[in-house]
Image (cartoon, rainbow, N blue to C red; front, side, top):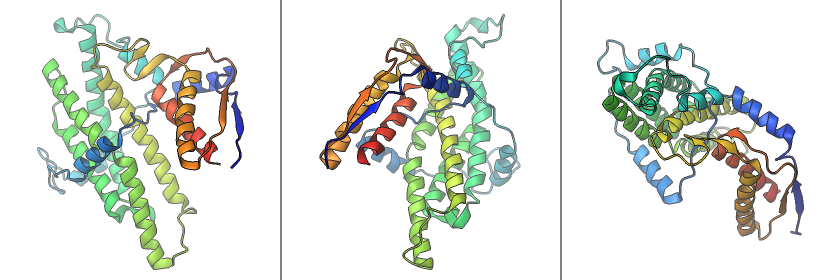
Length: 320
């Protein structure tokens, strides 16, 4: 394979900057989560796989409804649209009620309590929607063992969120934060586990329909996965932002996961270095990546999300 030269000149252009900023303002909570080292990811996957069920599959603790009825009812509710700007303003405490003294609480404590109250109300709706969807997937995908495991994680988290009291004190808010941390870690292996479920279905269908059967034309499955993964991104940014705000020492420019001075050129350099290393190890060669344009521009965004987008794009280009 000969040495190839590619130029990335659009990353820092003003047009792309405006497009990304508009997408950030219009799109709810986009975040792919922090990268996890291999052994840590394995540990999380093992812990999630062996997760015990804390409830009966028929009855929700503390209520007259069955779990299925509760899930169906909550799934009928509308999700609350949350823009990146609203997430940033909330983290800065700009959306706190005026004239609220907070019973002696600091502005930061009141902000955390405000976000916790919102998440206590919002997350069960989002989780319930995913559980209902995971029970009725095309081609029998919902019957695959790995997909059932993911559904159990969502049900488990739903039950925990519905049974914990709505936080009204600092102690209750701290307990709520601990619960969300466990939920965040529990769902970390979801991407890999869902991919395993699709592979299980492919193997099953090949046994039934012949070794040449391919899922590439299964539009319903691809449509579901797109919706499911986008929803997962939204849930993880809501939880991740809340948990990050508990760190009193925020890096310069950051409010939780959001950086008000995100540099696309800097992130492109990082992504290019990582993609080049991976490409060189895999293929023995890697293209040169040039970053041109207004490399000094910055905007408000979630750096980890932009990094992953650029890294995946460059990785595929390098392998092409």
